[in-house]
Image (cartoon, rainbow, N blue to C red; front, side, top):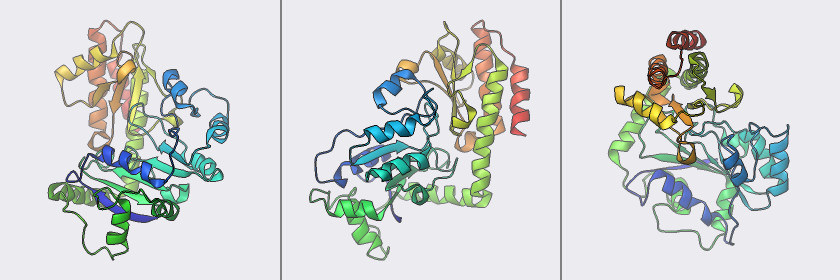
Amino acid sequence: MSRVRIATPEGPGTTNDAANSRSPPISSTPQPVSQKSVTTPNDHHRQRSHIRHKNSRSPPGGMCACHARRLTHTRQNTLNCRQSPPVHNPVAEIGEVVREHGALFYLDAVASVGAEPVLPDAWGVDLCVIGAQKAMGGPAGVSAISVSERAWARMAANPRAPRRSYLSLLDWKERWIDGGRRALLHAPAQLEMLALEACLERIEAAGPDTVMSRHASAAAATRAGALALGGGLEPYVYEARDAAPVATTLRVPAGVDASELVARALAVDPARPLAAGGGALAKEMVRVNHYGPDASPEAVHGSLAGLGAAMAEAGLTVDPDGARRAASETWG
């Protein structure tokens, strides 16, 4: 695929806005709303998404069968993994189904790049968007994309595709890629670019495999520590193999408000990478982030200790020493 460009805040919109605005111009005909793969085992989200994830208690093969029945539109949007709730999607498997139906395949890999392999060419992804602010531990003001030849052709055939715009991919292709990559179309945000350079140099020095291994260890240690902590905590993602390496979500016992637990823990140390679930999940889900610099033993132990203290204050029986031992032994 052709690597296109880095978008910075000096363009019209944030990274997410840029990604969203790129989708519609691919086709010149009106499109139905794209179905998205499920990124949570929660029933509410499953019912709205129309597609079952293999972690959603569906029968084996249910996800692909559902794709085959419903993928009748011209593009498929998928998340590689998501920070909240953190479920890993079988992108290669989804890509096979998308290609069988001739649809374009878009992949949001913002949360996963740096924490696990992102292979857009091997997976048949037509447009892949990444960001540096999560597992890469870089600045939030930049993003990068890759575009397949099939997607370029679809854009070029679209008479309504945006032109003379910071977000025009065709402009970037013609003036940057085809122009020999000699000059950027627009003035970049210098501080973000310098921060990105430092981020990439840090990853290169450590080695990408080492960085990804650190995220996997953080996820495994957090899960083991949370289970050992007790107090009625349960992993939101039932199987460890389906859990994304960037965060761990935990269901609190009935009668306990997750947002209050998180508030107690953060009152002691606001730097702890803890958060309550969003929306309807705010009262039942605790999210322990472990991506970027927080993919470390210190951050994992700090999160478990803070969560344990908050649970004990709420009257729950917990084992903080057992949680620390389990996390340490699992990290290795």
